[in-house]
Picture (tube, rainbow, N blue to C red):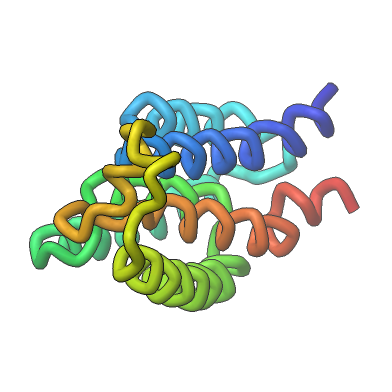
Amino acid sequence: MKDLLILAIFPAAMTLAAVTDLFTLTVPNRIVIALALLFFLAAPLAGLGLADIGLHAGLALVALMLGFALFSLGLVGGGDAKLFAATCLWLGPQAIIPYALYAALIGGALALLLLFWRAQPLPAMLASKGWVVRLHSPNEGMPYGIALAAAGLLAYPHSPFMTALG
């Protein structure tokens, strides 16, 4: 049961965040809050002590401050900033660097793909799908939660949760 909990929570939350961001261009607070709260349930089950949990929390706080700095500059959305921090909470110091690199690379590729797609006319058969129209609009933002979620899933094997399963 413990292993299933460790294996399922983070990937499920990342997938839900990505899908929600794709369809709504938002990452709901309830996903981020659940992810953060469930970390504190799963961390002791994975063998993290109080010092490790504190380190993860401190790194997540730094990530949140960085995310909000980027948000204040208009570079990322608020939900993206919070998702970045909650993901860093789970990944810890050993996986934050790969996570940030994956997020930058995937995010850059997603941005280029979206710019290319937005430069094309929207096919008539998709014009009735509100989420597609929103995603296609150059006046809308980018669903960066997709890149953050994919990067989080790629970095998760380096996290203490996966190494605890050994």
